[in-house]
Amino acid sequence: MIRASCLCGDVRFEISGAMSGASHCHCSMCRKAHGAAIGTYAAVQASDFRIVAGADRITRYGSSAGIVRTFCARCGSTLQWLRESKPDVVDVALGILDDDPGVRPERHIYVGSKAPWHEITDRLPQHPTYPGAK
Amino acid sequence: MLRGSCLCGGVRYEIAGRLAGALNCHCSMCRKAHGAVFRSRAGVRASDFRWVQGEDLVTWYETSPGTHRGFCRVCGAKLLSRFDFEPKWHGLPLGALDDDPGVRPAMHVFVNYKAPWYEISDNLPRHPEWPNK
Image 1: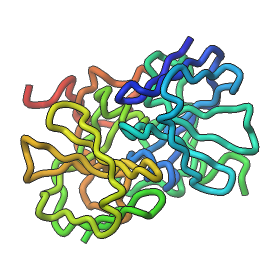
Image 2: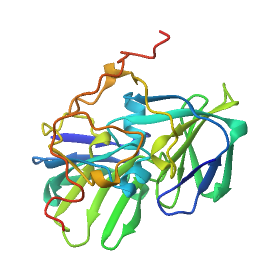
Image 3: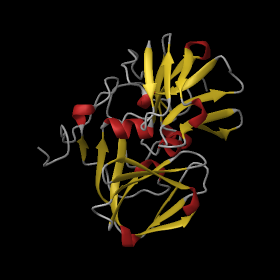
Image 4: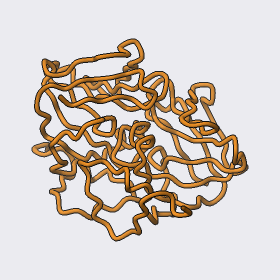
């Protein structure tokens, strides 16, 4: 079981299955939403993902067509990245995890949109946009 | 002039002066607040900072006594920290900037609290706590 919670503690998640596909995203939307250099997410099956507390605090923002980003209305913690086309998958912002997810970031995506003040210094693969995208 | 804005564009700010003390913070509060591996921030003089639009959209949460973190209540973008004990300076998350601030994070702080799933790979100084301690 992997637990996650926002800064104020009102929103709490439990993840019962394995996480996968952990990625550092440098797109401008992730940078804005997180107010950070990168947004790091990993995927979990929706059937393995449970909202334990604070469902009424979870605020949804549609950042682009078919994409919803969520955050806690009280403390602002960035929580999830959701695709309408893949309702069976939940991408969780790794920064809110209370436990070690086991997985490690395996790639950088959207490095074409990277912040000028941030340098990538690790050896992970770097993709200009999304792997496989034109 | 440095410009910044939230993800939905409802909130915009301008900074007239230079930023100072850019660093990456790995404390658990910063990681939780941003939902990110670490917070990159710099100091900005309160007198140099101006909300251009949407200040009423900024929700403040007091994360520890006297420290208030502000975010856009529409899109959740993290925008600014203000301090009751140091009102002349604000803390600026770099992620919402639209312009290159010129400064670069010069150190990592609170690495004792780093996420277990992340390894620091650059050569910047690493401080287990805040450097003054």
